[in-house]
Structure formats: structure tokens, C-alpha cells
Length: 474
Image 1: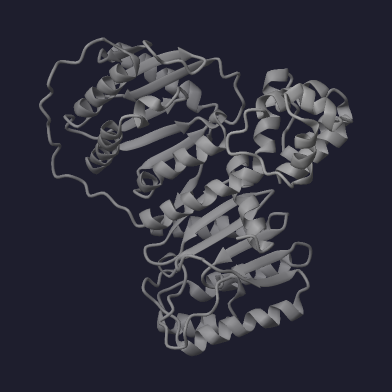
Image 2 (image 1 turned 90 degrees about the vertical axis):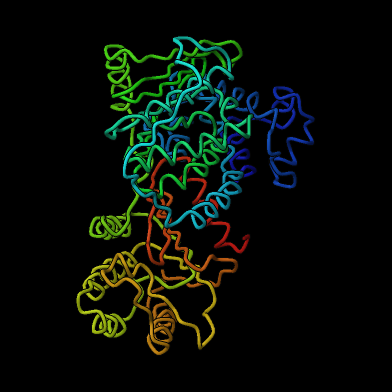
């Protein structure tokens, strides 16, 4: 929560409301209200950069750095004051991160099951003009990118398109017609058999990052997009765009301090130049981490291994869902379901999960936030049925009632198991989180899709959301 984090920083640095107010051009009473939580952090707080810079200057002692590294899950405190200020600013906004989670969840649920069909042959498009070497400003960038898409779609064989940009994104979204063209052309590129590797820029701030990921969810669902991120903070002075189709062409640009007016955008189709830009991209990629893993039926075994590893990890766990999880299913119900789907792995997987859960409950807290039971005559699907090798399998009424009843016995048997009612849970959603580990965002009906990620800022945003749901602040 912002107020709690602000209070901690003020305590850790021995800062009074009047001193902080002068540093941030705020009245001391305003600072006090922010500290108490009686005044929320505005959506776009103009004072936050000055506040973060102030605290960065005050964090000098080793004990201060060690405390904040533990709280923020940093390997080491940033040596440069500007990077320390950015780190503090992102951490202070943690409370507001959770407000960005629901749009992403809605996009995930709406887009789940998205697929693209491979076209029988590429559909060449007639260009209105031959690509030039140089384009300028946002309008020029739109033209260059449109030319790049056009040339990719004329290729006879697919390729992996390489995307990275940490420049200001107005060129893409300020023109609705071009934004719609971008969306259509991305789908066409994927439907022609191509793949996309994208490095997301996380330094923009958590709000922009979550908004960007939300826009990419439908494309992630195709299984043909590989998302990455650069895990270190950067100074933010220089920005770069690198869009490369290795067999075709590339668009490259740079800018300073997010100022893109009149900036040069170069279009290359020379193979030697493209090869050099592919190498540049690969050098950057070597410094990056996967933003998320995407699991579908083809990666079912890998998903269950990941889920068990996730469950084993230290740290309290919260699961929000419309239906109870497989780990809490009684063995008799799993055996009954297995008997009706003998080719499946229901019983085997349930036993692995349940054994891991019961071991975890010896030391860790497991909170299940569960939607109310459906009507007695409802036809209840088995969550993750296709990832268990039993697509379309459903509970009988007796099986489902036995599963729900078993949850009450778990509450009595394990002091670390908590069961709470949750409202407004999408019918096909399971969301599991551990603050120290990451998030699993699951569409649990058929076809099942799971996004797994551990990027610290996204994890914090979702963890804040789950904690607020657990506290009843949905």
C-alpha cells in the first residue's frame, strides 16, 4: 500500500512531513494525509518523481539499503542515485498497480482460445510507393512500419520477427486508424506462419507496462509470440526502436528523453545491414529474461511440473477461482473422474498436487478465494480438463458436492488452509500467486491456457490485487 510504504520510507530516513513537503512542493498536511492513507495517491502524481529523488538522496546507510533491498527483492541497491529514485518511485506505486490488473484479466478471459489459421499462401500486397531509406517523425515511423509489414507478407517462407522499442509510443496509439492497422497486420503476419519475439520495456512504469501487456494478450494466446524483458533499470535518456524481419527488412530509430518529433527512422533491406541488426538484437536478448511462459495442451506435462514447483516454493499462496483446485480434490472424486476418462492423468496429477499441498501446509499459508457453488442442476466443468488429457470432462453433481465438502474438512485439519468466499469471479478463471515466486493466470475451461510470470513489478501488482481480494476489498 502506498501509505504504508511512504510511512516506512519516512521512518527509515527520519523524515518529517514538513521536510518532505518542502522537497516535493506539497503542504505538510497533504503529506500527513498521504502517510495515514486518508488521501490516496493520485493516478498521475506530479510530485512522485521529486519525492522519489528526495528519498534516494537520503538512503545512504548500509542498514537502509539492506532493508529496502529485502522489501523490494533487489540483489543490490542501485549505485546511481537516478536509478535508486526510479526504483523507489515504482515501489511506491505498488498500491496503484492492482487497479491495472482487472483490465488485463478481462483481456485474458476475452482473448483466451484465440488462434490464427495458417494461410495457404502469402497474400502479396501492392505497395503504393517503394520503401525509402529515411522517414521522419511519428508519421514517418507509421509509414516505415507499414512498409515493413507489407514486405514481410510478401515472403514465401515464414520467419521470426524481432521487435523492441522503448521509445515514446504515441506514434502507435495516437492515430486510431494506424492502431487498427497495426493490430490487423500483426494477426496477418502470425497467420502466415511467422512468429514474433518481443522485448518489452519495463522502465516505462508499471501502469504503461501492464497496459502494453494487456494489448498484447490476444497475440500471446496464439502461441506464436515470445515475450521477454530487460530486468535492469536504465537511465531513460536514450531510447531505441529495433524492428527486424531477418529475411526481409528492418526499421530502426532512436530518440532522446522521449522526444520523437522529427526523429529519423531508417528503413534497411540490405542483407548485410539486416544481419548486423539481428546481431544487435541478439546481444540485447542475451541480457533479457522471459516475461512469461505460456502453457496450452501441447505443454501440459511441463505446466504441471511448473505448478508443483510453484506450490513447493516458500511463501504464502493465494488462489482466486470460480472452481476449487485439483490439489484440494478428494482422492475418491479423482478416482471416479479417472474411471470415466481412463486415458487421462487426473488421479496421478491430483495425487502429486495433493501430496505437495499437504507438505506445503506444514509451514506455508494457502488461502483459497472461491466463488459460490453453482446451482444444484448446473453442469460443472472439470478445471484444466484438456491439460489432464480429458477434454470436455465434467463433474457429476455428487462429485462436485463431495469436492466442496472436502474443503471444509481441510479447514479443520490444517490451520494454514483458509477458505473464503469471493464475488465477481469469471466462470473460467483461476489466479494463483506467491509474492516471493510469481503468478499463474489460468483460463481453466477448454481450451485451457496458462500465463506464468515472475517479473517483479507485474508480480507485485497481481499480489496486491490478490491480497486486497483476500481482505475483502474487491
